[in-house]
Image (cartoon, rainbow, N blue to C red; front, side):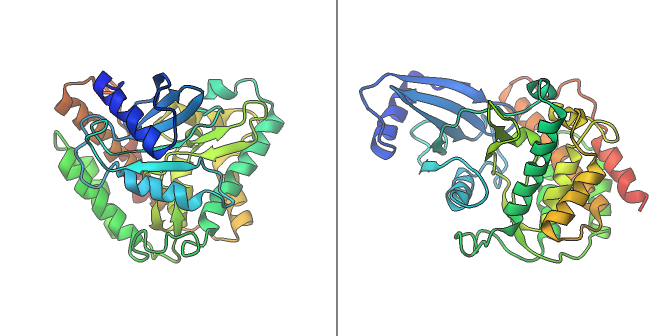
Length: 336
């Protein structure tokens, strides 16, 4: 996806007025990522390089892809113990490039979307990266949401019930065919729901594929990216989402980045939990429920991507991919 010439012209004018770029300098746009989620565009204006984020083409779910929410989180978290790019400006006017968007600082690092990115790193580097990865997750959950201006970002109570209700609603809105196992998983999640013990900021999509690493030392995390699903909620849900993406050995393959945790030096999923509990001082009970909830959420995100492809006539990004995730999550809950 790129911008039409008239959209590029309007964007150049907007950037000059709101970010301070040179209105007369040449503008070049590259797609950094444009998959099933928000579109990330690298924009060069002369010698200035920024990032523009906008919703995917054909998005239709009313609570998804809220650029204003993600921009608010970046602004709040920047400057804390959690590394993030500096968010520069937000535009709610769809008349500029056809959708709301925000602009943030460009960082030059590597994002490990699959294991090949870290194929040359040592086990010692991978071990240090794992430790830092956990420390940052703990730092996210330790943020004082009132102090950083996120106290009213979302309701503080009833997170689990709201998550199940939200994703059940997304499923009803996005499905193109009945899939009983997804409905069964939703019902079992409602029946097995544990009590929420605390409320923190949660990232909502915390995994190795959503961090940017230093090019010279992969154990250094430059930034945590993709905060579009951030909210206030139960911190154990973040850890569980991470675990869903941790290794290919005992869970369905949902993303190539899972294989990173199979490289030498990365801890097992169990050791990752132990590390999180030690650093945070938090006991992580009922993790099977939280992992099943993460699987439910991820399944419905995938179904939404398929629905967008059908509605827009674009290729299905998951065509031909087996979908064992809801069955696996259902068995995980049923066995406990």
